[in-house]
Length: 388
Ligand SMILES: [Zn+2]
Image (cartoon, rainbow, N blue to C red; front, side, top):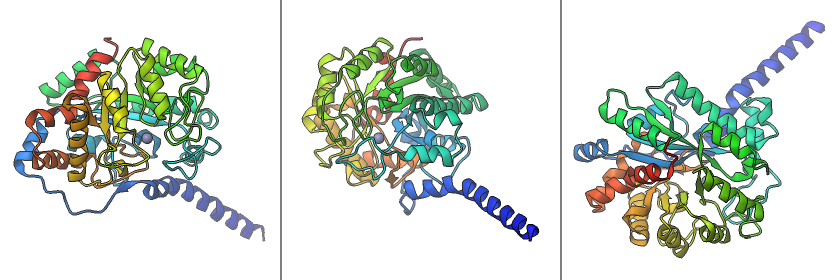
């Protein structure tokens, strides 16, 4: 009898352990990926053109998932082998700390959270279970871990001098390290405490999104309930970010928050991942007029590869980038994939040459291609990051 209880218990525990090992992968494969497709045709000329570009992407949530990013995976969109295959020189990794159940583009609140379950299933340290700040810091530690394990493949960039060094190293060869920058998606990660900004600064975070899918203590989300502008705390945070040369990202902020930020900002802001309303009138996208206001203030608008652009094929990406250039001018447009952000795309980081091919096919000039694929991002970061 006791033998049977023992066996049942052992089988039960083994099953539970197996579930914990397999579950993170299953969760990720349901949440995001690349739509099955025939290989994208890229001509030798386009491949050569792509290899000569400095490619930069403003938004990937890869640090949230249970994968070793130094190893190539068939899940999600981004890891360092795939970034190398796609000739990506600069990748911003954004830390997600809370996401509401039933997340949508119209109306969400902060009462539920899927990341809490993910944190437990993925066996993150206990300190991350109840603190959003710790979740962000843990994701920074994961990136630092990759950089110390493979310094010839990953460098965490915290200053303009760091970025210059990595770009020089890539030009010189033979190694091609990725300049990895840290961002946060939603300043609720501060846990309402401005002192946490010192910890984020020290950990190397160089861009912070004010909101994510729900209203927070700083102000309204583009997908929240209040649609309100910046709160007093929000203004304090924006001032503190500017003082530290940490970029302000308004990708998920309500139009009123964006207006309030622009009214007080002394530095340009970023929209790290978005579509363009002119070609895809989605509630996920700010109005064309507000985007123009951001660009006029020197800001950068990074166009994504997921449903915010409606047509997610490489030619659809080219159409969205053309609309962005028409609207904002060629100096204010960049790439903001939203890879690994719970999104479905038609290509992953390794297949980015397909975008260059689509831009050539759509008649983009050499200068336009060079600027949107990464040139604008390099210029912007060198001007906005702390010098050392
Ligand atoms: Zn996002």
